[in-house]
Length: 295
Ligand code: SF4
Image (cartoon, rainbow, N blue to C red; front, side, top):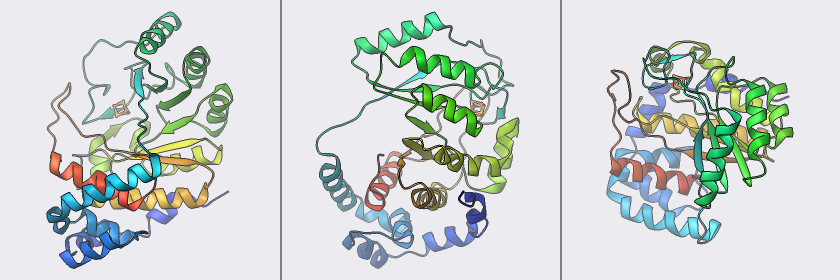
């Protein structure tokens, strides 16, 4: 059993990392762009404001690396929303328990109808998405959904509440291929300010959840931060630390990083630190140069 990531997380200070990113210069960026294996300090340089002048070069290098590693193939997946019922209150999410909206959980017949509709679009990989509602969409419901969907799709992943180890095993045995668990933000105060009620208020449990999935030998784990919640640059460095920890601890598992950007939704949340298109390009290309993973 590996030590939990939260033990590693406690060794890093948000302010120090933020300061290091903003202190990076054009020379640091150019040095990082000459390397084939990037350190976390190089990644800081590529995420820094100083890298904004190098976007074109970053994009060209990133494209070349993508083609070298993945060829000209592109893997497409579709999210399949199974339920918008949620027991938690998160300020930025339309599914939040305090929002008044019609709640719906798909029946078995409806799940199969969705599968057939997706197959007509040649979709072969799906991501099952639910709110965090263990009583409504717990492991038993998810296992049933996976078993129903397995004949239709090559790969099935989930983006749901963190589960117990035995539940992950149950779903892997049913045919689960991957688990996405986004930290949303690694900034302690922001995390507390945006996660107001329910299991997701426990930041440490969230930090350690991907490791719990890794322990069960899942094929793929997806990480990410919610762009717009806090400083995307600093959050991305923490996500990189998380990734490096998991890669070392669970070397047989594959990893991916996603870039969910906050958009307007039901409720009165206004995005506090919006991430523009130019910044998103910087972020994606910096990740490609830093880590040979799916993005
Ligand atoms: S737990 Fe997930 S689905 Fe529920 S309100 Fe929070 S972000 Fe939305």
